[in-house]
Length: 168
Image (cartoon, rainbow, N blue to C red; front, top):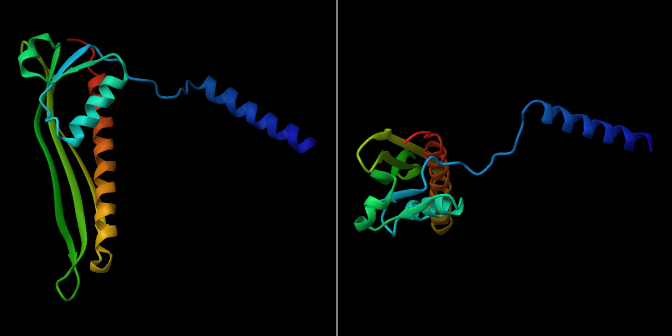
């Protein structure tokens, strides 16, 4: 019984100290704009995830039709969206043993009038992956998972940068 009361006292002390230090869970981002035009292709996996993330906040409407660009408050110019696979190491027989997977995303944010809100910015994610010829299918599946993980990281970084824009 004494141990239970000691544990509850420790838990309540931790809760009070966290609330007193300003700790708060991450909230949905607040954007300085309500409409955004994006030229990301409908087939781009990163574009689909970014659109979903922006629209899930229920604060931003994403416009993808180029004819409606004047209805948007801001324009997200996608300068590049690349996936790379580079050989990192070889064994003594010259066979690949390790790859490095990279995703590069360059963008800028501006108003329709041309005022630059976020200058040309590149986000780079990279992951190392070992390679084994005997487990080819498993390694392809692992590669797909790593690319999806990098894509999610990039989308979250873009969301934080868009939320940091304060004035149009």
